[in-house]
Structures are given as C-alpha cells and as structure tokens.
Image 1 (cartoon, protein in one colour):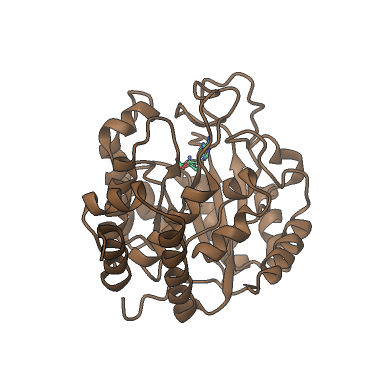
Image 2 (cartoon, rainbow, N blue to C red):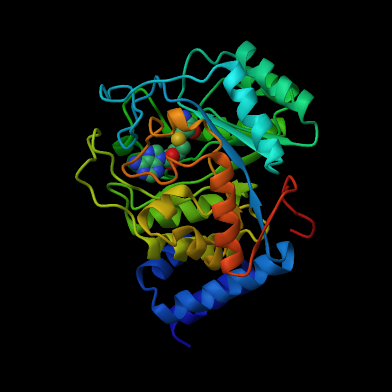
Length: 351
Ligand code: SAH
C-alpha cells in the first residue's frame, strides 16, 4: 500500500498520527482519500450522534475590543467599525426569544470589551440560568484571568470557546500584535479545562502565513488537548484590516480538516461555521456532510448584526432569529439531518 493510504488507514483505526504524518496527509491528499476520510468521519459521527445536528444560539454581545488581532474586523485599530454593546435587557431578550424558538444553548460572544467585568458577566450568566435552567450557557469572551473564569463557572457558565488560532508560536506572532501571546492563549485554554468547563479550541483555515506544517501542528494539538468543541472555519479577509488583500481559505481544505478532526477525536462537537457558509452557499451543508455536527445560528438583534463583522460579506446579517432557525432547519433536512433542540452535550462515553 502507498504511504498516503497507509496513513489514512491508520488515522481511521488509531485516531492518531505524528505531526509529520498529518502534514503528509494534508499535502498529498487526493479526491479519493478525501472521500474515504469523509465517509469514515460521517460513519463515526452517526454512531455517536445519529443524524442529529445540534444548534447553539449565538448572541454577539459587543464588538468593542481591546485587542488588535490582524485578521479581525472588530480589531481596536479599525476606525471604520461602528461600535455597539448590547444592554443587559437586550441580551436577556435574545435568550428569551431563542428559548421560544427551541434553543437550549446560548453562546455569548464578543470582543474583549472592558465593560464586561466579572460582576457584569456573572450577573448575566446567573440570570440566563435562572430563567432557563435547562439551558447550557457558553461564553466566548476571549482571554481573562483564572479568577474570572472561576467566578463565571461558579455563576453557572458551562462551556467556553477560545480558539487557539494557531498551535505554532511563530505563526501566532504573525497574526497578533506584540501584546498578545501564544503562551497566554494556551495557558487560558489549560485553565478553562482545569476549572471544569467544556472547552472549545480551533483555528482558521488559510489564515495568512499558515503553512501545511502549521495545520499539522493544529491537528496534533487537537489530538492531545482533546477539546469538547472545535471551531474551524476559513479565514476570510476584512477590508479594514492589514490582511485585506489576502486570499480566503477554501471550502475544500476546511471540509477535509473537519473529517480529519472527527477521526482524531470522534465525540468532538464540531460546528459547520458561518464563515464556511459565507465562502460557499452550501458551505454549512458540506461541512455537516464532511463530519461536523453543530450549527450556530445568530440570535443577535438585527439592528447590530451587520456591525459584528469579523470578515467581509458575513451571511445572515439581515434575517430575524426565527428566519435563521427556519432556514437552517430546511437546510439540514435537505441533506437528511435533523436540527435537534436538546443541550447537545458531548457524548464522551467510551472515548
Ligand atoms: N474575542 C473572542 C471572540 C473572537 S471572534 C476571542 O478572542 O475568543 C471568534 C473567532 O472568529 C476568532 O477566534 C477567529 O478565529 C474568528 N475570526 C476572526 N476574524 C476572522 C476572519 N477574518 N475570518 C475568519 N474568521 C475570523
């Protein structure tokens, strides 16, 4: 058997490869191997989760950010970004509306906005859990102190999403300003896990300066860290960032990596992201068909949606939450999957 087939076979049977082997697999992938891994990924996902696709209601609570990530449309130096912050009342209304629409997980995501102190966030988490005790609350509010993560966990937050962005320190430096560090980001991820959160990491596919080796390092990190969730989507340039002229990541490579990640860590919750739906009209469907099992429709008020613009041409910025929900329902049904309304916790038994 040739090296490519033998590596692919071992990924399927052992869920683990060396970093060099991951790089070889990415570099030398063929349509046939892509198809083989996709089928194995879908089979495995079906064994664990059937044809269920979990939904998370995304509430984009603020686009004010103290950070200056070079790829991100809401970076501090973007003077053209029309800043907003949702009020407590706005956020709670989004969650209430989401609950009525059948969402049982709410993700509060935002820039690193200093207004959201521990006191403010704690109160929000508590209030959402008080109103909707059967729901999971996920936070995606960037890097905070251990004490802060502990307080929010004690207040009832169940999950935390913090993409690692890249598992290579040199690559990390090319994507972020000097004030940010790879070490700190990884430290935060380790602390979140230690505290007891269900943790999500992840990276962009095709981010500037990314090499095949970098992606292989990301895969090795995912293999060892074993995140409960893993968010990957294509990099898409934003017109008001230094990376405005860089090419976007591709649907093909993103879907390939979704299959590989499913095979590395079978129970992982893997979203077919909005970015994937932005680079191709059927991107999210193709993501699910490659091994993803989560979608994250937007619950933010329509009045602010356009302003949470991490990248150009983000989809679903004009639709009401109910429309988003209905549209995704139809999209998932069209490919033989079912949007389900439970909390969608990870099923780790046996892994
Ligand atoms: N402040 C939070 C939330 C960041 S936004 C945090 O630091 O975790 C969520 C994710 O969007 C980021 O982690 C990044 O991977 C992704 N993102 C940002 N800019 C992007 C772009 N131009 N293209 C694609 N994804 C992008």
